[in-house]
Amino acid sequence: MNDGFFLASDVASIGEGEAKRVEIGAMLILIYRYQGQFYSTSAFCPHQDVSLDPNNCQGNEIICKSHGYRMNFTTGVCMTDPSLFFPAFQTKVDSGQVWVKLK
Ligand code: FES
Picture 1 (cartoon, rainbow, N blue to C red):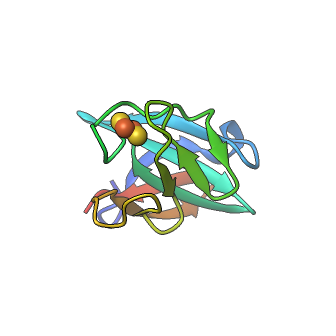
Picture 2 (cartoon, protein in one colour):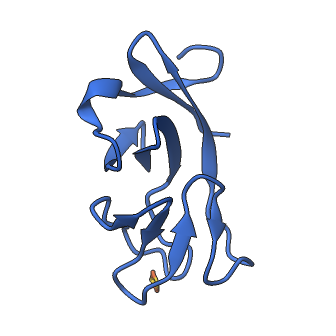
């Protein structure tokens, strides 16, 4: 832990435009690399809590395979239904590692 941030991944293991599922304690999150920046969100769809496939990103969105809901992972907004809660976490890079603050 570092200032409330938890170590989530090494930078090199996530290619540009890719996402990866990571476990921090008992929590599953997704880490994204998009246009040189790193982002992180819940690993579950806000519609019916289905596990999201990290290989199903388009641009800055991840798309749930169940019913096609689209979530912007840079903002944590569900574009299909903005009233749904899709948590995005503060994410930073330090010393070649990706760090995530889960609150
Ligand atoms: S469970 Fe993801 S869109 Fe319905």
